[in-house]
Length: 588
Image (cartoon, rainbow, N blue to C red; front, side):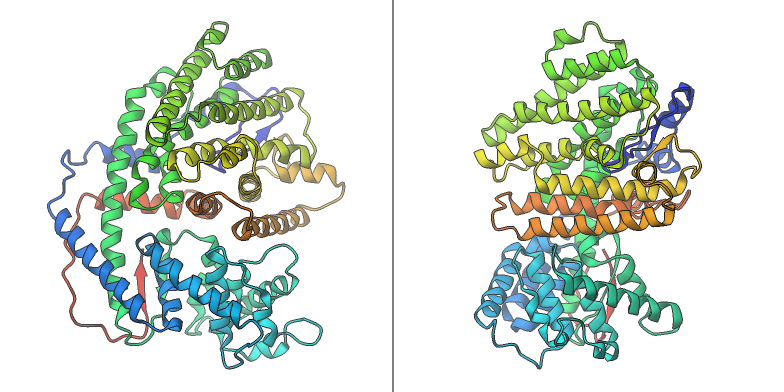
């Protein structure tokens, strides 16, 4: 069946060829990437003592610079505060300033709400767009009428925008990424700014802003995880806070890498002690790769233990996937396996093959342990909701196995309906919701028992993105290799692959609008930290899966860097003299 679900580490390339040799799947499951081999070699050579020599002094310096930036935020003008908030968020260090950022943007929202009919024509487009983007990212419904100055009498973009500064068009492009369904002006703004910026970048390679344009088009701020992308901050001349932000970014990166390294060691030990890779020879053995998802999606030092805990159910999704994919069990055996999970009773596994017994016993123990830990920490037992999420996933895997056995491609919509669930996203986010322990109301728990819109939308984005990129590597003439592209082509006779790919890209864009709408929905009672994790999940795919042959992804490069450098924390000396520079590149 060759399902390698890469949405949360898994891709859904379903092979509908019943005669495909089982050993082909085995070699795929047991193959190790160069990254995994490097990890295994490196992890064995790490120092046992990670209480690093300079850790305390670095933490002290870190606290001093955080306070310095907070004071700068309090003392700056309203407009400069917006620039500071933007820079802080681009560097991925906003968790140190949550209260200050919330207060700044609340004040700005109230100010603009009171003066909604008093538009300041002196404001540059870049400032209007920045304010719009920051407010929407914070969950405020900033109205598109702030762009009325740039529309003609028909509500369309004025052609005079062609004569705007490039920075203005970059800001408009970034703001358009926050659009929701029905905002046709922002659809036009996104298309207009993208085309114009692409034209500039392709025709004027020596243009001083060519690299900035290319970076913007490839990594829009709203769709990117900032810590894993080099950030070029356009700093405001000699503003005192620019140097402090650079210092803070460098120190924070050292501390975060050190913390992630400790978490990696915990995950590695847990997986080794579990022994599944030795007992089930055909399953994947990549705990480092699995950890990268919670590492990137759930940021901040306060969620350190949660990142480790979430890697455990995530790893079991891989194992279950490999049993459905690589073991070669009959539909009868896979049905019994699914029924055992539905019963959630160890007695139900006596008729299962040994590999399924081992897997179910581990799943049972890990899930119950997770539920007990949640109960102890937060006073709520989530076992019923956790089991329901696993049952959904097993039934999705079983349905795909039946498609494989029949040798027939489903319709595109049937494929996507099951494919949303088989990403495993719902399972992980349900675990994350309870592990984070915020917003544990009866309403939200009931919502987790279902398939809430924010999870469904995220799952759709991940499934379509993965199929769109993964299909580049597949055999275009092999219709037995199932993906949304192949199913859609089957449903629409005569349509080309190029037209199909364009349809999928447009659908992904529409799903992003729906996800943005969840950010702004007043009835959304889910905690902001959980919503942020959902968005980070959608931002993960282009970092994790570049599909550039053997070249490592941005995330793999980052993790290899922290493996080598995380145990070499160095003190950052104070810099009393402010740097006189117009802009600086800060790698977060």
